[in-house]
Image (cartoon, rainbow, N blue to C red; front, side):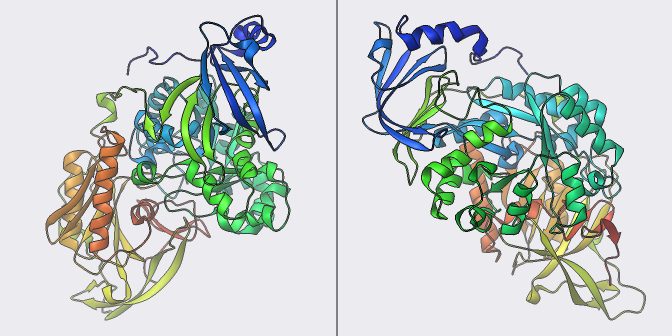
Length: 603
């Protein structure tokens, strides 16, 4: 990747403080003055009419009434016309790879929606390419026209002993990454049993992060709020986005953590947990909004953090409070309050001009004092990034698969078996541990399409072993012969294939092997939809709007097959995530995540 920055990086406050003082006091003209705005002040919780803001060197210098003293011959003057001046929105926890696109394309998609700061955890690419992958995304993030801070992945693999990923990272890698200019902290610590048990890898990574004075991200996915939870909190994680119940949010905040409430493409966890504020009266300063995983179609068609803020307002939050949860609360959590998260002197001039606060209707988007978008359209060109050859051709199947690779042999002499089934829960990351009685024909266990039980397979794709692990899943509702295969399978990112027809399962898997990764849907031997993702088998190298269109075609084709789940592809991609209960599949077998152990497929 090119090493030269494509956009001017903001100078540190220490280098421009004197200029800001001169502008604020009228001794020097501002670069820009925005007049007649309603200042959404997230520090005081007020909306202050009749406000002007003066900007110099990409930072706010003056915020108050009548900034005529800061206007000179070369000052650009913008009339807000009584509209709201809102701080640029921050996404506190997210994975770029879930958008199917690169950092550059993700920024192109979300900037028009008002996102000016992101805190990304590239643990998807880390599980494929290791530290090299993290560095690639780190360096790309540095060159963006908005703030893209990177969290060093903490759990690669996510659950040692229960899966094998394409790479392994440890405390030495974390310590090295903490020296990089744009690493903001440690990514979500998913191995929560390891933290509670004082696992050396987890304690070492957390210690290296704390020693660097940076934030430790959390991920406690268990509903158990007993001693294991208390041990996890004592181990150092400072936030958590895995709560789904109001008691989860309350427990985290009471223990000094930040409760991150997510609204992604398929995770709808805000409405239940925000009641801790709206009904229980907890202090909203300790609640933060995020997306976690956003599909490219969601980004292009529905929005990003603006979508989350609108949703939070619809749940009963005051607009200013919801905005605080997506701006200043995030900045304070990552120790960046002096840089981002508010419209105040010294901060980067990241702001939105908004015509309606309740619906967060964004007219213009500015970052570092430069207008990047207007009327929902990007106004700057962010050149396409080229990833090196080492980031491609990462899908290694080792051989061509056939329908027989997906046969599940029954115990000798059985006419029927009772099998464990992964149960998908719509709009949530956890699964249910179900059981089903399945018929046996010619020694092979059959699916039960009538009761929505089809097959799931994990195909090893990092080392070309040709290994296939088979199991059962319920919840997709497929009614026709079909198979969906994806090389996005959080977090080890082997290939996941779900289907009602084994020949289609083989065809879909082989197709992804041919093109180097992505997601594809087959039915009766015909390819219905394809999204190519050649970068680590996780990301496309095409424009975000092109990827979104392909993803939309995929969603429509899945519905034709009978799948009515909201954003079913996102549900598909999490079926191998062996750190979220209850039942998952890995390259080692079927995993009971309530006990963190491998279990037999048959009961």
